[in-house]
Image (cartoon, rainbow, N blue to C red; front, side, top):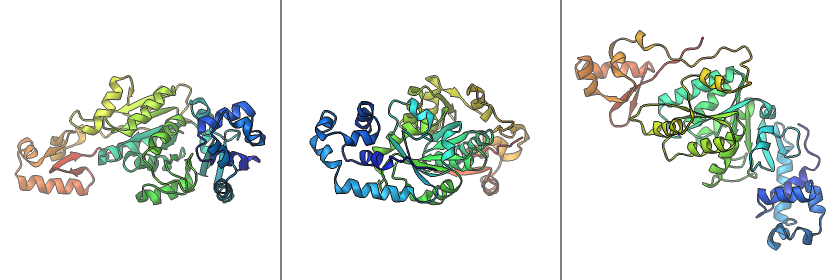
Length: 366
């Protein structure tokens, strides 16, 4: 990608400590491009920033940061995309506080494609992760790029599903783009950098910090035509993303779950508040007006339960214990335990904390 010829000026403003994005945008609105801002007498800028911030504009710390960023951007596959760049994602221009620049590694062209955010719990169930991956794969096959936050659980599953098909995936980081967090997703991040896109608004080297993750959520929702929540507790960062999506005028979708599951309560609250209930990829595509599935036929509908026999047919969809299954199936504890082990090895049942078991749905594609 061709870099903005004024990139150094953009970086100088963006990397100045204490000069927030809102102040930066006001300066741009008043004086024009960053080169014009920096050409002003410092007294002309005093109405917008404190003396300490103005002094930092020309500091050695900022000069070194600019040099590091320019060297990073010169590496193959890397880019710094500014508000003035034609490759800046158009949908982010619609949100109240678009970042002045984005650090990008990978396929930057994905920023111009129709996208959907998929988010959810870090402590997801195996079924929730399977649902997220299957849904993301079907929507990626339909041509949507899947946007998420590289967290454990639902985010990681959504990224894997997006990578599996042509729509691919974008990971929005809450750290510097050269910092992988969590470290358990290092291999996934490398794969996304190769076949999808990593982006961050934070300077290189920015370590994980709690206040940065809610901030990055507005970009996850802002990049997509809508936001789908798969498993979320009532006190969940995923609900922050969903609220940001609603505030940005995006469609909000939620996948329902068991009334007994804490990880379904956030989704149920969203549905009560007007989010669209989603059971399949077709439910999402039907709501995205003007989107065309490019000839793809993708589904996330599960295999009909009527084909199930034996213990699996007795389990239902909520977590159950061995005693319940013994009573329901009329089997001994030894036989139930043996059957559960077989089903677990076959990927049809998951063992949960507290001696509980839950059926895992196997989705099929047509």
